[in-house]
Image 1 (cartoon, rainbow, N blue to C red):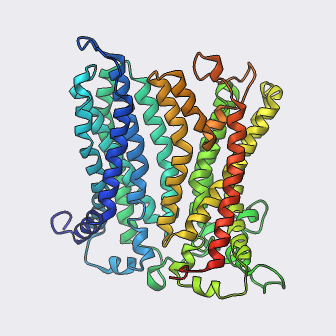
Image 2: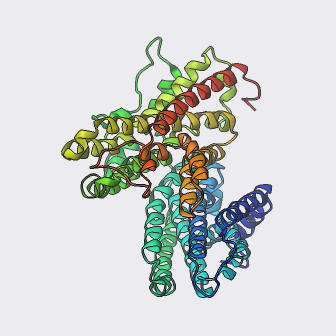
Image 3: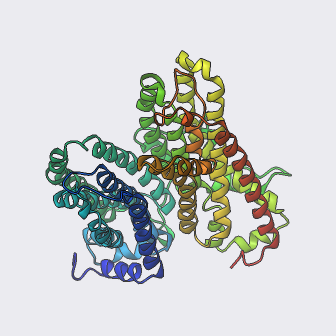
Length: 545
């Protein structure tokens, strides 16, 4: 019932592994990893294999860390919709009424969700074998690294399944999963790098300490998910959970959102109880009062609590203790908005298509600008208010630390980058929603585009410096930094008190042209995206299909 005769496991494996998307993702994954090895391959004409060449060690670390980050970011996308997908397809109630045990359902969902990703990791072994002849790397270290990678994937998948059992939308489950998993990924990378000189200790931690801790949490989260399916909450029509906002506020543990008080009403206003006034935008009024929080505020409360819990120690570290690394706090704000912001707009138009109401919306006398404005403002105000909760600690730390007073221009530039990032993320999510058929596709497409734009330029720049490429190559790669806000933040000029040192070359410290280039590029991108959406809505061809 749990493995050999589990219909949930069999059905999910057949559906997931037979899709064309599975083979395309596997090919892309292999190409990315092979590209990392090819780019980082030592260029020495002669190598002394009797010693441990540093280039081989750099190559192995880069390969493992690159694969770890990619696999960790992909795990929630495979598992976060395992249970919420049943709710969105209106099959959750039938699944609960089946004779299957809840534990068998959860186990089948976990195995089916992670099998494809585990195949990715196993398929990368031949690429890693190519690095062994370079020397400086033990077979046991490779096996331990892969063991840690597989355990991390199982842990992150279990976290995503756990979140999926508590939410009714895949987008909400995906965001909370990323908020929980991202600090764990960063902590694991920091631990791996800090133990680079002590390979024996790192091996013992991965083999002896990590498995029992990880599988204990996996068992606890699996049992909690199974218990929720055994004793489900009140279900209404088509298996949708019945949520009373007032009762949720009374029973909520921790943060409580009160829609009738300030500042909660800025982003979670109470339901509308009277008629709309004349001349108002009906799309804006409907989205704001009846749609965006129709499934409760659990995701919103968790996002606020997790982000503030991480913001307090980061404020003390980067704004008071290690002020030369102050740029990492704006990066944290940007990463938070990157994860949370798109979720409120990626389903703006796809939700209308999924409810089969997009055709009715297009037949009204509303202009494309009114439709886009109503959808955008509602989603952006929620994402903006959530992000502002992290901006206030930044402003407080800047005001209390006199080292920032002589860098007021740099602080303004950091704030400008953060504001434009919030706008660009929301606009891109709305654009993806207009050109996608489903909310999950829109959200994943938005995340993929943002990761390419934001992470690829600084990552490429870091790799070229790490592997000792020529200065001309490094300068050419740095030129594309205007695509990424991370590169723009690191390029903001600072004085001697706050200067962030990339390396020993003074020419690489601060580059205002990258900051100006990013600001201009982002404004142009937002304008072109808005123009494209207006043209798309005016044509109205194929939108209601």
